[in-house]
Every structure is written in C-alpha cells, then in structure tokens.
Length: 233
Image (cartoon, helix red, strand yellow):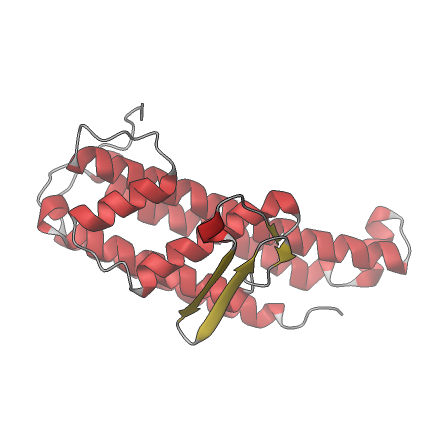
C-alpha cells in the first residue's frame, strides 16, 4: 500500500465537512432567508458538495488506487505504471478541489459585491472584487481569511504551469507571508509547495470563517434574499 497518510487526510477533511454542516444547520435555524435560491446558503452547501466528492475520491485512493496489484489488474499495467497512475489520480483530485473551491468562492464574492454596490464592475479580476468586498464590509486584510484567498488564488494560477509560479508583475515575482504557523512562498519561475493538505485544510476553515463574517455583517445579514441565479455581467 502507498500513501497511508490519506487516512488522516480523509479524517481531517470529514471533520471540516462537519463544520460546514453545522454552519448550514445554524443558518437554517437562525436566519429567515429564502434558502432555496440564496447565495449565502448555497455557497456553504456548495462547500459541502465539493468536500463530499473530494472525500469519496480520497476513500477510493485509500481502498483501491493505493493498491498497486489492484491498479495493475484493472488497467493492465506494470509496477511503474501503477505508481504513475496513483500519483496522477492524487494530483487531479487535489486540483479538482482547488478549481472547484476557486469557482464557488469567486461566484460568491462577485454576487456579494453586486449586492453591496450595484455600480461595481463585476467582471473585474477577482483580486479587485475581493478587495472591494473586504473594504466595503471593513474586514481585516491582514487576517487569515484574506491570506486564505491569496493562497488559493496563487495555487490555482500555477496549476496550468505544472505548479510553477509565473508572473510578469514585479510586485508578484516573489510572494512570502506567514499563514497560521506556516510560511507561504511563491517565487517566479519556481515550483511551489503550498498545495499540501495541511495548508488546504487551513484555507477551507478560513473560507468558512469568512462566510460567517460576511453573512453576519448588517449590510448582508438583513437582506431577505441574495438571489444566486443572477447573471453577472
């Protein structure tokens, strides 16, 4: 068996999903929003669905993909091929988590900004969108929630470069900051090592905390419904 540590990955990821579900229950019991079409609730539910898919894949890795003999039998390959399949499956599952999180986070922020400022240019790059939301709601841009978005965005931007950080912006050539007890480093034309599950788990927890902060702000909390199915133009 390869990758015994994925049992811990699954355990920790399910613990985070439990936090997501607890917050869903809290919203259902304490808010009078129109939940069936409200982005504030839908976003949290999307986090749960992303984790369900991801965690089922982790379970599949543990039970099958990490078993070289099983892979060799199913796909008619040798030991080297089975190892390559194992590594590729892990990578694509992790990438799917990152892409999925990025997609729902960006949608959530763009919709919140549209509600806060109808004159905003919603199609701007995501950095400007989240910056505007943080400033309009007076959320600390030095906190872990802001850093979580930085981590997620920078990791996502390296995926199509095989994990290499590439930028033409001078201020982005070398990114370093402390996130929780870890040091995050992105250097131009260098591979990064920030997509570890320890870091991704912090990102997930901070995204949940950020949703709480946004949802409880009076400018947002007192709105009866922030419809999800609105075209962002």
